[in-house]
Length: 171
Image (cartoon, rainbow, N blue to C red; front, side, top):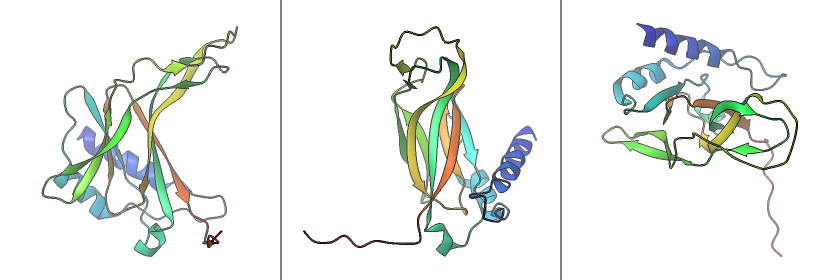
């Protein structure tokens, strides 16, 4: 039952995110995404967590102009002067027999970030430090499932293409 509450909360949160200030709020989550989540996607392996993003429904033609950026990271003590970054890769993993895929962090537990070493007296505060990122097609009919090491966060944002498509000249 707690899983259903979490998925419902995620669906409500995703449905309330507006893509641009001048756009109307997106419609509800596609019911097919929830069905696919329960039927096709595996549980997280030991030491990992399964994060789920349910995108607001869009018509198929409209989805072609959108991409979703997945950003995996952790909230760690950091100053506001140095630049921090976790390593690793976000790879796509096919689910045999379904034609779907999910994303998984490879190459690191995301324990200690790399950072510049600028001397500073700035106070350390909890800040989100990004790690592996990936830009994926927008598909509201399927959930975006990301397997991350325990304690990691997945943040995401939607990118929208300009309606103009420019031709490249020959030179």
